[in-house]
Amino acid sequence: MDWPRFGRVVLKPFSAGLSEEEWKGLYETFRDPEVAEWNGSSPLRSPFWLFKRFVLAETRRKDRMAFVILDEKGEYLGTLELYDLTPEEATLGILIGRKDRWGQGYGTEAVRAALDHAFRVLGLKRVKLRTFAHNLRARRAFEKAGFREVGLGPGPKGKEDVYMEVRREDLGPEA
Image (tube, rainbow, N blue to C red; front, side, top):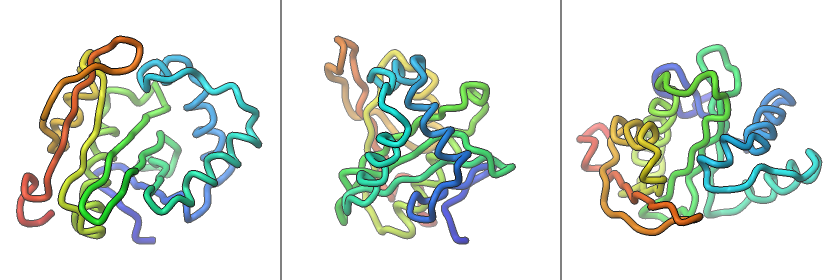
């Protein structure tokens, strides 16, 4: 298995199939009110079977690559996507659903694994993202992974968003 990895994390592609434990972790991530708040959404209220059907349909899209984030023991931590994928760039989305792992560097490592995959394997030139300006923990994690702020703007629910990006050349010749 040559899945993207960095530090303690591995990004398992949805295309490899998810275990029942991984599906359960993913479902609980989207049902959690606190995680939903940090994602600018409402907690999921759909039944599991419908959630699974929707996720599988979304992951078949050609403009999207979805992964579950696994820790050093192979346990579910969260989800990461590269979406709006073109030959030149993608947008990154990440959710660490295991709140007991927040603030321990797993998100930064998952982002680094995704960036390595995006630049070295997919040949992209840029990866961008949007996050809440008030989410300082996420902003610091993205900066540690190589992102830089490129703008501010209005976001959902009246909160200000920060737009960030990283270019292949920002990470040096090995990217």
